[in-house]
Image 1 (tube, rainbow, N blue to C red):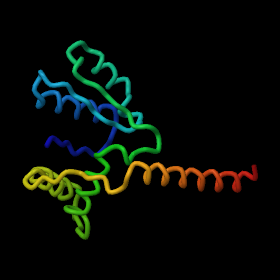
Image 2 (cartoon, helix red, strand yellow):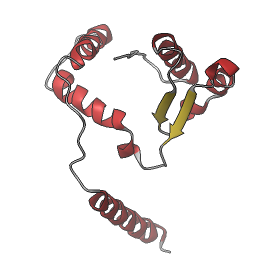
Image 3 (cartoon, rainbow, N blue to C red):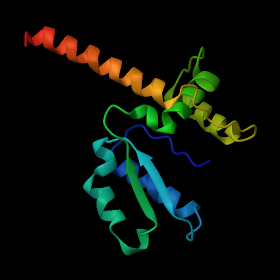
Length: 144
């Protein structure tokens, strides 16, 4: 599994990770990357690099706003937190980075698939309920 721990998340950081992926994934494979709508993912630096003819195999897919649950990396971060970071303290950023690096190196030793625990309808109903609550709160706060 490729990973790259960085202290910021700018367009340059995203580009650095994309270049790492590009180096390690066989050139005959298509790359489909699912991302949220963070501006760093769409920065001019990233767009310029992707526009080169050598990057035709790259395909970026952006999740809709308020739909981070669609992005499986969120589930992966949850597993990382539970299995490697919870109930642990670190005396330095370097120690934290080393722990993450170690965990990622061993993550695929005993792979388990991500399994949805809710049906699509349950998820849609939950989103609708959340939107209704947000609408109600917003209207009461603005008196409209």
